[in-house]
Amino acid sequence: MDYPIDYRYSREHEWVRLENGTATVGITHHAQEQLGDVVFVELPSVGSKLEAEGAFGAVESVKAVSDIYAPISGDVIAVNEALMDAPELINSDPHGEGWLVKLTVFDRSEIQRLLNADQYTKYVAAESDE
Figure 1 (cartoon, rainbow, N blue to C red):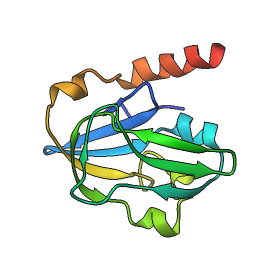
Figure 2 (tube, rainbow, N blue to C red):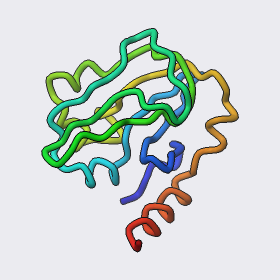
Figure 3 (spheres, rainbow, N blue to C red):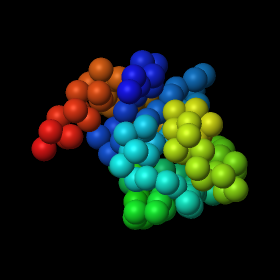
Figure 4 (cartoon, helix red, strand yellow):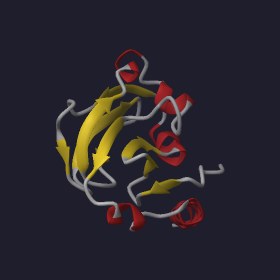
């Protein structure tokens, strides 16, 4: 899997794409692969404040329910309503149509602490070797 090079990645397997001060957040291809078929997504409401590394929702798959952690802090300005009717978008397009929330960014330096695509690819490979 080639991860988008313009995204940043957390060690909890979330991604962030920054565009004009807005951060789009989702879970990575690796995360959705580990989960299996996603059947339900719980997301915060617009206006919620997220803290970096804090749980902000959950993804339920046929295997388990997993918390989703905010890779950065910010105010939720949009949630992906399409996931309410079609949670499987997370499986079919995790880095595109399967996005979770959009945030206003509180602190851009938080993004710099995340992994780039190459670092994340190596992290996933090392984790798989364990």
